[in-house]
Length: 69
Image 1 (spheres, helix red, strand yellow):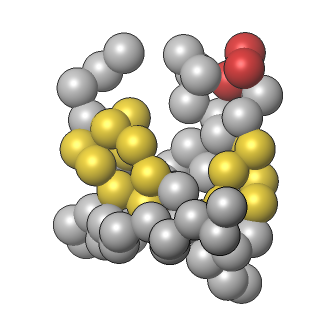
Image 2 (cartoon, rainbow, N blue to C red):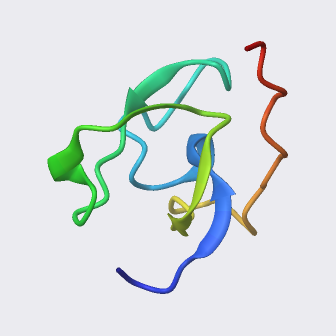
């Protein structure tokens, strides 16, 4: 896997919805090495395979929401 930067899925080029209406929306991760797992993620999720979408500046990483479990 390419050495990426941490960032939230909502700003990643691999997030299936390129214009999420809210950070809580869930969509598939289309990162080539992860696509086979059919991951369904919220825009608030994040990982180190993050690559900013065209037109996005620096990664806008926000800490994950606390778990309700």
